[in-house]
Structures are given as C-alpha cells and as structure tokens.
Image 1: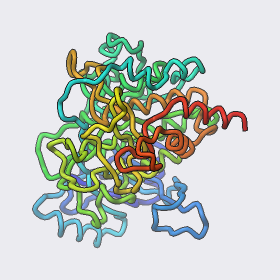
Image 2 (image 1 turned 60 degrees about the horizontal axis):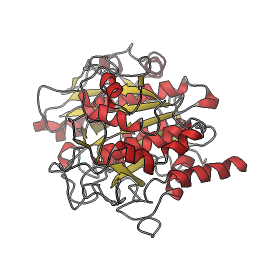
Image 3 (image 1 turned 60 degrees about the vertical axis):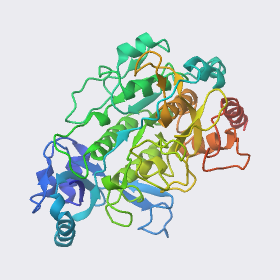
Image 4 (image 1 turned 90 degrees about the vertical axis):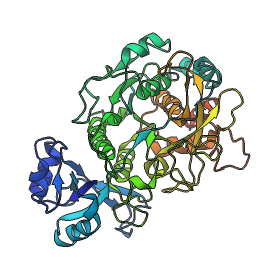
Length: 451
C-alpha cells in the first residue's frame, strides 16, 4: 500500500524544504521509519498549517475561513512510502503512536481520467463557441491573454492542437511541471485525454498560456490496493503555488483544470479513518486545493461520470459519487450538458457532494466533435470535457479581471448566480446552479465595473 506520511521535522529541515525544494530527501525529513519503505524518488513537499482567520476559530476545523502559515515552526512536510498490505492496519497504528513527529498517514489514492459511455457526438466545438458567445467575449478583449491555465492531466500534444483548427496554442515550457517518473516534455506528449482537455480550454481562451502538468502519466510496475497518483498531484500543486507567487501581485491569474478523480472506495481509506481522502477536508491534497485557491487560483474539477442513468463501469461509489477535491467547497465542480438542448447527460455525476453538499456547482458543454484526440469523428465527452470548457471561460474573464480584482470566491459566486437554471429551483443535484451563461456573466461583470 502506498501512503503519504506527513511529518513535522525540526524547523531548520522544514525551512530547507520550503526555501530549497528538491534539495532534501525523504530520509532527511523522516529518518528511518520501521516497516515503511520510503520512496526516494518522491521529493519532500512542504505543507502550510491551516490557521483560522478568526481569533476565536476552531483550530481543528477545516470548515471555516482559513489562512495558511508557512512559518517553519508551523509547517509540515510530506513524504511517500510503501507499507505491506497485509500489515497496514497495525503498522499504521504503531507508527503514529510511536513517532511523535508524524502528523498523520494518508491515502495516496488512485486517480484516473474520466471516460464515458460511448455515443455519437452532438454538435461541434463551433456550436459550443456559439452557445458560449465566444465572439462577444473576444470583442471585449477577453480571450485568455496573459492568463496561465494549468491542464493537470495526461500531457498535451502541441502539434495535434495546432492541426485541430481551434487556435495556434502555446505551452509555457518554463512553468510546466512533470512528476519525477515522467519525462519533462511539455507539449510533446502522446495525443490523449490531456490534449482533449487543452483543446477545450482554448475554445473560449485561445490566447491562454497552457501549463502542461501530466500527473496522470505516473505509472507503477506492481498493483496494490492504492497507487501513487494523488501524491504527484500534491507535488504539482506545490509547483503551481510557487508559480502563482512569482506573478505580479496586481496581475495574478492562474486557472487550474482537473478532469480526473477516484472511482472506487477500495482505493481509499474508509470514511472516518484519519487518512481518508474522499470525505475529509484534512487530507493533504484537499488542504493543497484550499491553499492554492486562497492564494488566488481558480481551481476547477470535473464532477465525474457516475450519473445514475449511465455510470462508467468503474464507478464504485453507489451514493454521493462526487468525492474528494471534486467536491471541494473552494473548487468549481463541473457537470455536463449537451450543446443541442442543454440537457444533462446521463453519465454526469449528481450531487450531493461529499466535502460540500451543493455539488456540482454548474454545468458545461460536452459530448461534441472537437479535438479528435481519440480519432476522427469521435466525440470529446464526459465531465472531463465540460470542466476545461468552463475553465476556458474563466481564463477569458481573467484577461481583464485578475484575482486581486475578483477573487476566486467571487468568481465562483458570479458563475453560480448568473448560470442558466433549467431546474428553476436555484440549485439542483443534477445541474448545480445551472449551465454556464456567458451573457449573464458579462452583464454581472459590467455592473461590478460601474460600482
């Protein structure tokens, strides 16, 4: 079993990990942990301490406004390791009981891209551009210019994007990132799920700067109960946090598109276990999402493809399938509708979510002929497509509205308030607050500008 171990080393070691990432090893941070095979290929990742914004806040609650302290006496460090499946229970209990510097041991849950039931495409990406009123966005100078969009997925193929007809895409080589087990080849990965996602960002934001973050290409030779993708996502988010900090404070714009998630509880510790991911805001990755959003990034996740009418065959969550960061209160969770009638597609996961009940937040368009990443005539499908479609709209808006002008929290509220609500109830488990509505969003932005 692969796990994440959160350690509170001495302040000087913690400071070294914060100030000089990549210079320390797992052994430097954690020493020798009996029964744990530390992964020397995984560079330790610093984690800030969540601190209540209110002086009388509950220091143990993640469900309140938070700041994050990077002071070495507060921060902790994550390392990755293996524990034998057969003795994982007693080993973990003994580890946390006998090692006072261990903060916790968490699931390194498997995460995968989100395929769907096969079907014919409905419309084309040009139809999506039309219903999104992309021309109106671009007439107002909202095309993603100078905005960084991280496609956290399986890698981007720039040549394929260049031949696809949507735009002359650019991949930011310097700000892209790869796990240690994956060659660093920004924009030069095989055509696959990540290329599809990048294409769909560019429908609304053709001038965005793509950051290629191929966390889904991490592979292991041996199968165990849990594999190691989520740990790579944590390291990727640490990189994105550093990227955001290097941007001018008055012009910070980073959109993070995530079209992946876990499929089954067997890849996680059970709910209630202190190391659980799917139901716990305290898991390090869920904390990383909160910290990145607090710092000014717009974080979007696909809601998943476990809808009641047409769930993917891998779906193992029989109820409330929007789990973990896909249901994070500080992320936009995106369901899927078709471009012809705006109806929810049967595979689009329904709420309530696990970390926040009101999920998905809203729906984007999917199941259309677009990137042809899976072959000529094959649809871009799933909430995997809907998520980057909405991410592209967010990136387009960020061309003129930085995180200082409009915080990620305010952006989420505007998207929710202006969404087209087919349920006419304000919120529904099928559609969230409704389908993305660009004219309504632009009108709301104009009202803000006049205040």
